[in-house]
Length: 422
Image 1 (tube, helix red, strand yellow):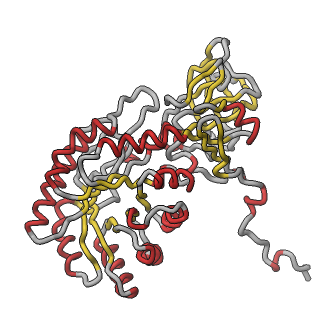
Image 2: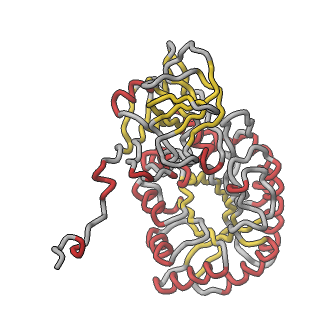
């Protein structure tokens, strides 16, 4: 995380100290580096410059409209999986012709909204979904551009919860059924076949699964074209990992070097769906120590950020490095870093050796730019934290901290509960 470094003993994001942001906005908060976000998308653009391509950022990783706008300014598009993400991408000013709609459970209203917007294509995951899209497009008097998501049954060697290309996965159409599904699509009057899609998982740390999967899809493209299917777009998915702890994931250029021969041979316009690799190491979650607590079996550092702010450790047993915002020279201690949520599973780190922390001090939870704020909740009636974008020596609040009134928005007490009883 090269844009998060200590300067004179204080942790900075680019040219702004994290304690200065905390003084302004309170804690907890998320801070993102404009420089990191820009550098990461440009790395993909440079790596795949030899083929026509679209970098469709996976909005589920970080849905803030300022982040989406930054990527749109760089020529990027968006991979969306809901009507809400469609709304966000359009609000950020992303060209609808750079939007790809994925996901197993698209509803007809979501389909209609995407058709009205004029998106590039739908990635279809079942025959029932394909039929529903055909019916929706027919009602609107348009043709829906589609790619079918093909499940290549390649093991991505990642966490089971984020493996998406195996036979047991809910995602995609089994590769053995793909040709039959393409013929069904070709027969439907308001469907236009334009592409093919695959995605095998997230937080991938080696190139070989990409190569294996794309070789299978390349062969399938050849077979489909031999049967007069017009495959113009090849959505190769995303999932490239980042360094959270000791991982050494490939860089976009490493990935490109391994797969460009296949991509060039296809003659397709290539679509990539990076998410975590663009934003993961561009962000941190800053939290303040409330108490320290000594138990008989464990020592605890209680902070003001909980699993409602960052659920990945509780949900995936995910590792996030934790660093003091102000360096100290106290000894290290093995602790659990836990939040205020009333759940035993509320932790940011377990059995972690950290510099001894004191109440009032700030800690930075690293690599929190992806699947962090997008997975926040109001559990225990806790307002969501703000998001900050740092640019050089200045920063902007790109999402305000929720208020107590925000927690009540949309709720009402019915008259039956307020009228006098007989």
